[in-house]
Amino acid sequence: MEKPDRHTTRPQPWPQVSAQTVAAYSLFELQLVARRSPTNQGEHSFLRLIAPDWVNVVAITAEGRLILVEQYRHGTNRVTTEIPGGAVDEGERPAVAAARELEEETGFCAGELILIGEVHPNPAFLSNSCWTFLALNCRPTGTIRPDTSEEITVHLVEPEAFTRLIDQRVIEHALVVAAHDHLQRGIRRREWWADLLPAPQPDEPSGGG
Image (tube, rainbow, N blue to C red):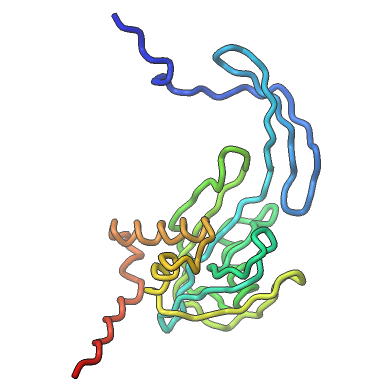
């Protein structure tokens, strides 16, 4: 009988031998982790970033507009267009963080908040999850309270612009693209919340002579 290829067996967890904090910052903790291979018992070292969970909010106003934010991002040295979002505080539930970040960044409060997806931003070295929420019937009844290091401009656009801005590479944030995917998959699956979304606007007729 032919032996199975070694790559067809399911990978097993690697037991942790030790973990050492190399540096700790406000955004993450850098760990040097030693783990043992379950296959050959060899020990290997890996860098791991311990980060808080993050939230993204696909927010729709009571009038059916999508809320976007623009801000300067120091990682890419560029002004980016995104949806509201941020980090989950210690001991905070993701839904609470989503509502808080939405209000702090835009001044809008959600009438209804629905979890529509979760991803691991980069399992290779990041420890956290990113939760995507759909916020419906948002109204500008809150108070904008951005961090002192944030300068944010709020834009209200038609929901159909979400896909177009990604196609045009105006929106390039990977986690925002993932949030868009959560939204579209839910619509295709006809999730119960899809019926609560505003109806797509018909294309305007082109002029003719």
